[in-house]
Image (tube, rainbow over all chains, first blue to last red; front, top):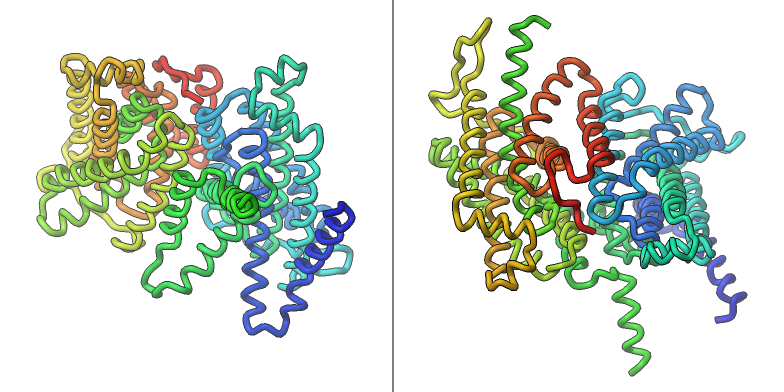
Length: 323
Length: 291
């Protein structure tokens, strides 16, 4: 496809995505679909950011929810303490706090690798969770932080379901473009180099520690923005948002979709959202096993299709084409 | 703090440490042999507690539960290792990821089968009372837990140092591949190691139940988190590391909760982060975690 045609296609798809609540307004289940899609897109932003680490730079973080949670808390607390609902302030606070937290944790973890990196990120994220869970005066502790302010841009209020969706989907498109651009840039190539052979990259003169740290901060910042969007959507932040369960969820999303690709985390979030939100309504009410189903799906992918849905699709496509 | 209170808290810390040892020893054993951090260890621990709950309901005996739960978990281990982990031999990170999936499945099925309410299991008759100790009364069950932890650690030390199985374990921790080359059936060795690790988690589930209760979320806290903390601080893969980690973290956590209250959890994980950064092998460990 010619580059121009490709861009036109992307633009059409983006516009169609952002305007979804409007063209689906006649559907019977438009309200449910809009909420489902909104939450899936928030998960997709979160997963895209984690994939910068897991897929591109080869850093398997099991503590990414710390930044998601920090972003949510920062947005909520900023709106309450500063008495403003303006998006540039609250979303800015989310990004800055998540970035700073990622910098602090990043400095501690980027020198380690593999399982060791996984355990260290888990432990440090657990400190963040513990603070969120126990520092009741600031975070609301185990009750969570309720009464998060509305997202406002000047006088435009995004808190209606449709506009909230528009805000989330625009952010998603921006995040996807950013990740796409990063992956194609010399910086993104260098990250892949770090994943494939760090020693060689060092010999080539790259400061690999700095590369890994910067990836960690960028990923943490985007996760913080996803966390803020989640806080606006539900007007609530739970300590669990920063907990191990949420880190695991993001990790599962990335792996099931396909690590190291742009489409992977997005496809993964579609599948995970489907299992979490749609599958329970297909099962008898007394059967609440969506987590177990998610676990089984995850196990199947780790065992048989480590490249995720995108990898499976790609090899199927190649097989068809070469026939 | 009065002297009596300090003494009481010290005992609490010791009994917590003993529980932590029972909990963490299985995780440490599996890691030492297979280089796999079993993230389903907390789910195994939780399953042990719920199996015990049912066994006590049916038989009325805590002691039967103490046998049945580890046996049930050993069976689970004997299914999980050959069926799932073995397919990814040599790919340690993928094996760790696999255990995340196993954990999701087990925890959700427990919720489905046993319900998602907070349950409790009382200490067996004879151990459910209190005794007078310096300046106050103290629950007998906690003293039993301390004794049990000490006996288990001693028994494991004897097995490690004096038996053929212990010799295989020590050799496996050093270099499992070489062990295979020497003609040992590593498939069998790994399966039985994993089953033993799971059984120890199940045992911890039973013994901890009267103290910590039986409820959703116990797989992560205390299950997985505290066992990780202990083995990381003490040193992964060695018995002495698990002992040292439990003896340090048990009292540290207990006194932390008394002294710092709100930030106690953060204190424990700060210790972990510090140890990981300064001495990645843990206080007594020799092995650095593989890539």
